[in-house]
Length: 233
Image (cartoon, rainbow, N blue to C red; front, side, top):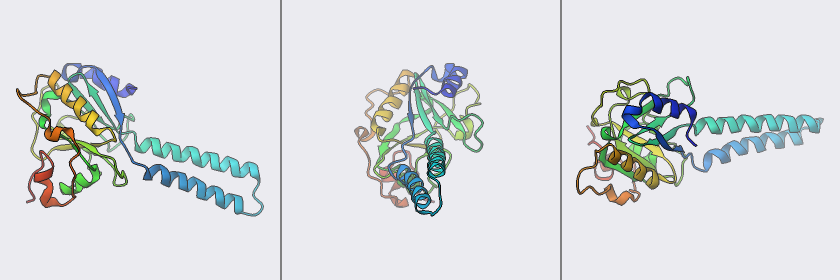
């Protein structure tokens, strides 16, 4: 399902990216829901074991807490990657959320040679010498076993949702990361969007066949393992 805000953003930038086709929520892995569920279970046990507590109050407080934890989970995984006809929209799509920009990137603004899949988004971020919560990175340190799509594009400040219509070029040291269990499928969809924008060179083959690249997290391995990475300075 395409979020309404993604449709609105794509409509404003139809000449850049076309209409939205597919949307994915960021993959948080199993640890986050287990932790939030554990909080609910712990509070329920404390209420049940507390002398003098009424059953109705225990059930009511547990339900309120469960709904609150569900809201926290949905907020956490709100970050999306929306593949459009000729580009992508990436970022949180809750309207008015501060300090969390959304990006509109045309296919020709992405270097297809850098579209790849890594074994862990958070580990790849550490390997690049940047924090996993960098604005252009949508990933989580607890996303165990969840791969990520990486690609090189323009600076995020140049392609935010209120951007100008003029095209930008991919910029060195400007990588985007998006964690999801179906990272290879997403990477393939991104490459098709680039192709529909006429930016796939003749004879092109995807990096590593879009098979996951095992990343170590060591800064010195970045250039060898992650396409588009830069050497340590």
